[in-house]
Amino acid sequence: ISTPGITLEGAGQGLTTIHSAATYSTTNRGISILNVGDLTIRDLTVDGGSQATFHDGIWWSGGGTESDVSGDGTRVERVTVRNIDRRGISVYPRFMTNTTLHQVTVDRVTGTNSGTSNGGLAIVFNSAGSSTDSVVTNAKTGITGTVSAGTAHPVTVTGNHISSLTGIDTTFFNVGISFNTTPSIAPVFTISNNTVRGDVTRNSGIYLVAPGHGSVVSDNLLVLEGNLGYGIELGWNVGKTVTVERNTIVSGTGALGILATGSGGPGAPVVVRD
Figure (cartoon, rainbow, N blue to C red):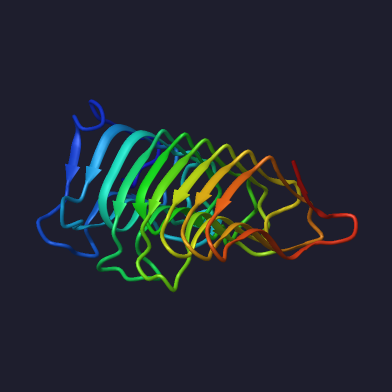
């Protein structure tokens, strides 16, 4: 898709299906979007088959500068993406904003061909947006991103259910919700009412690097029964208030509940309560 303002609508999940080729290729993608927004994609399935021959399920290409992006505010809803190798849904352009994923299901992102560091990622945001009321199963990381450039916009992750975090290599943490940004960008995160479940070694619930002032992590259920890992980790948000409240964390042997590294400071603390 290279033109903004388009609606791609199927008859329903499982009724309209985009199938992959018989063999894997890094150019195989269910839906490719070229630096455009103002799209609606709904009521369909993207399926890479038993061999996961789609490299990516839904993929926004490009990066560049803010002027390279045409349109804003794409919405993906009631879509199933399954049997993918690298990334289930990848919102890659750095300056795309207000991308909404709602009631999306992503299942089985293997990473078999794309490798440990880059593959097995269910939902990826390289720019601001939201994921609400979605389901992720059988992936290394559930919802992740960098939010690495451009004007900071809010990032909202609420009401999602993430389970069966498989991992690819147990030397890497398998994280339910993970965002790694920089202090100069520091978007405001709202991470609330999510459920993350996993029982393999090094599972972790929520990991935020450089969340912006006013970010909130609340009312999440994190059931991580494998060894090591952590429930919630916050880092490198000096001088920015972040509130962590009303979360329930069940962790395994050798795991940490809440870890704050290089965070808060006088007048802008990390607040942990309830």
